Structures are given as C-alpha cells and as structure tokens.
Length: 196
Image (spheres, rainbow, N blue to C red):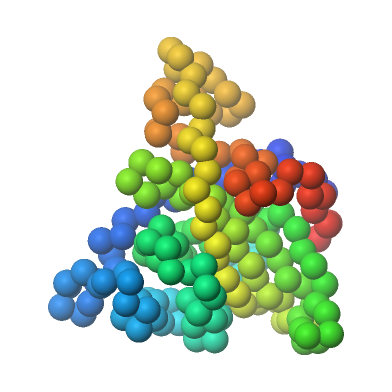
C-alpha cells in the first residue's frame, strides 16, 4: 500500500462520552486526579487488544504503555483525559500515517508507527495522534501514547452540498475529517510519510 494514500483518506470522528469514566460505584472520576484516572485506565484497557481498521494492525494496551502515556507532561488537559473514555475506538478508527525505525534508545523496536484520527467532545473537534511500537519478530503493536489537539470544525456546506464522499448538513455534524486537516492541527504541513 502506498503511504501517500493516508493524505487522501478521511478519519471517522469518534464521539467521546466522558461519563463512562466512573468509579466502581458509578460516581464520576475527578479527571484532575491522576491516580484515579490511572486506576480506571488500567482497569478498562490493560491487556486488551484492538485491531486498527485502516491497516489491520493489532494493538495491545499494556500497563507500561498506559502508565507512560499518562505520565507525559501534556496529558493533564481535560480533553486528553476525556478521550480515554473511548480509547479503544479512537485507536481502532485511526488512519496509519507514517513510521520511524527503532534507534539506539529503542533497539528492540522495529517501527514506531504513527496514526491520526478525530474525536468530538461536546460538539468540539480534536485531532488525535497515536503512537504504536512494533517490536522485532512481533506482529502485535504496543500502545505507546495518545496526543489530543483542538482542530478547526469541518466547513459547513449550504443545502447539504457534498464534499468528497460525505454530506455536511450542519457544522458540528461531521462524521469524517480529512487526514491532512488533522495533521495540520499538530503543526505539520509538508511531512511526507514513509511507506509501510
């Protein structure tokens, strides 16, 4: 598959329902409480696997990957933590974009794969960037991290006009967002992806 195809694809928007992040008794978890979020995240995803629809990559959520993601400095934003409510679907519906080879610091990693996707939280759109590590001799990738960035709402087309394969009846009702629009939200405009 030609890696340039990523720039011609649309990511399906995953609607996030943060009310799913609750304690065992059903009470909402305070998203500013890193310990409580970590406990919920490990309980919800640890040792689970999902398949990325775009390229068939199997992704395993490990304790180390989930905890490392939560420790990163920019993981304290509310939108990022709310996205954990649907982390499995966010990974599953992401689009493969590029990869980098493992380096001296990551000698057991064959590829660091990057995927982009889109989410909506309360009518606001965010781009997601997911990193997966695929180790030598292992077909299963390991979840490494999720980054969430606010992106522009898709344009509204009057009278239900079509744009590509999708009709946008009203702003905020988009179900697909072009990958280049998501990538731009992360400050990349001319990045050329590697082939698989």
